[in-house]
Amino acid sequence: MSRHDLQPKADKPDVVRATVGWDRPLQTFFAQVFFRTEDEPDEGEALIWVGTDLAEILSAEAAIAIVAPHAEIPSNLAEQLAADMDETIGVKDGLHQAAAKRLLFGPPH
Image (cartoon, rainbow, N blue to C red; front, side, top):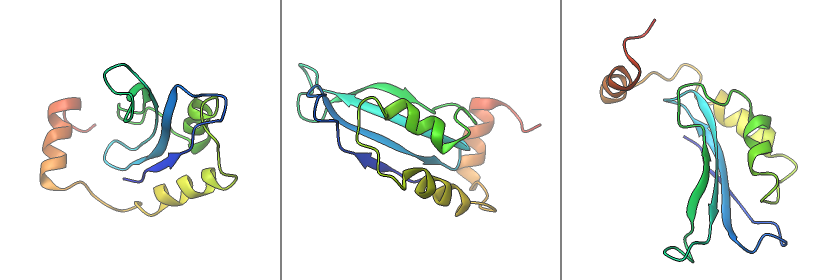
């Protein structure tokens, strides 16, 4: 799994951070935006969290679009995410990952 933490935009003081990455076991990109809350003023709470289902976000650009209103996006982020995904080609699930997937999603097709 890869993870890239992004800086909030200057005009978004309620955002603590945004995160995008590649989740190899779920075969999806993911996007999170952490907002300050009364209970979590420093760490924030992920009020936006997409990419938790199998193959939910299939492109780096789609993940970036989710966080773009809230965070500064490095110019090479899409390329980095694509490289993160490419590095996992051919990597298979371990015994425990495969068992968890069967529980969550049923047997493979």
